[in-house]
Image (cartoon, rainbow, N blue to C red; front, side, top):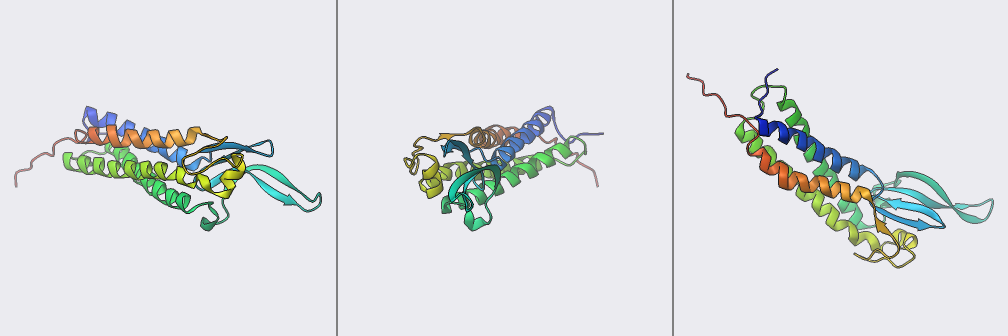
Length: 200
């Protein structure tokens, strides 16, 4: 199998897949914000949550259900900022995944990625990383929602954590975006081989 990538291009393909995987895994996991409610660990993502209070009618008390899941609807996400964050970060992850898979195909298919295509792919990665970075920056604006305040001892506010802490998934998503924007975008400029000039 002939590759359309240079040696730098092979490194670019590997790092593109790695950064896309890091961002996508981090985005999907509900461990962006960690706290406690009713002595149970609670965690939030942009569109998922682990552990939530439910009213038990038999015992006439509120109990914590210890399981993870998505919010019932898009409107069920606690704040407008988190809804925007979900859309923006999701689109950014999609772009990084698209370029990562295209780069992987470039390892096996000759003449798939030229110098120009490599530079366009780098531009798409920059935009994808910028969108994910914007989503990560928007996320703390939602810390003033009622659900988060209940989990963080009613001390949280925008950009103020209270008793909660930032989880590994937030860092994972941001690290994937940063490597895509800074490293992969630069490597993409040297990823494709020069096209052969055919005499006609």
